[in-house]
Each structure stands twice: as structure tokens, then as C-alpha cells.
Image (cartoon, rainbow, N blue to C red):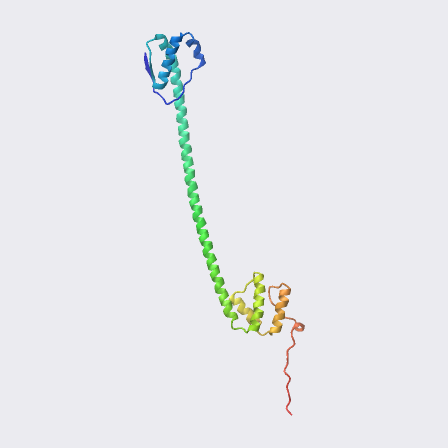
Length: 217
């Protein structure tokens, strides 16, 4: 008899021990023929035999093989679907990751460009400020300018710098103070770690030099 089933790509099959009782009654020759029919059915999906005893034994085994194949195909399909879902999920996450990375790089580049531009503007302002301060100090007499330079260096060490307008006001405020008193004021402020310059007390000031009048005889 010839039987056929939908062949699968399975690489193995199961023989259950509970079928041994029936198969043990077969002669070695018929058992050998049965094994050939089993392998033909598993590999090609069909078998052929003219032996009624072997055919009867195969009928029971074929029913079991078909049930196992159906379960295997069902499990395979479930695993395949799960794999596709997992693959899609991983692909989606990878896509999102790339999108986030692209946004991150874009933001990083924008921030970097912004910082770089701000730095350039800051340096440009500093250069302009230094140039303006140099222009402010240039016309001042050298003796006075040296005292102002000393004070400006002290302020720079404290990370405190004058802007052009502030420096003009500073110079104007103390323009009537003598160099001797101005020097004392600066030294006192630096020694006391002051952030500003303060007027001297009357007893601290240098006495004014008065010109003596001569009377002609």
C-alpha cells in the first residue's frame, strides 16, 4: 500500500516506547521492512509496501507521525511570528536610536557652534575693550598712568576689570588728587585687599607745598 503526507523539513522524528509491544511481535525481516517504510515516509512523505502486517503497523505509526508534524509546524509558526515581531521591534528601536543619535549630534553641533560663536564674540569684545582702555590711558601723563596701571593690574588679579566707561569715571573722580596721595590711596587699598580706592583721611594726606612770596626792597 502507498501512503502520502505533506512532507516537512524536519530533520528528526520520534518513536515512542509504548509502540514497542506491537512492533516486538514482528520478525526481524518485517521489522527491517517497517524501518525502511518509516524513513521513506519521513523523508519523502510516502511509503510503499505489499506486506499487510507491515502496512498495518505503519498505519498506527503514520497517525502518530502526522500528529507530531502538526504540532511541530504549529510551534515553528509561533516561533517564526515571535521572531518577526522581535526583529521589527529591534529594527524600530535601532531606527529610534539612530534618530535620537542624529538629533543629539545636531544639538551637540548647534551648541558647539553657538559656544564657539559666543567665544569669538567675547574675544572680539575683549580686544575692543583693551583698545578703548589703551586710548583712554594714552593722553594721561606717564607718572599718573603708571599709578593707574598698577591699580588695573591689581584689579585683574582679583578678576575684576574696568570697562571703558567705568575707567573714565574712575580717572575723572580722582583727577584732582595729587600723585603722592593717589599712590598712597592705591597702596592702602591693595594692602587691605579692598576692591575700590578710598579718599585718605586729612592726617594721611601729603602736606601741600606753598610757594614763598619774596618782597622786593
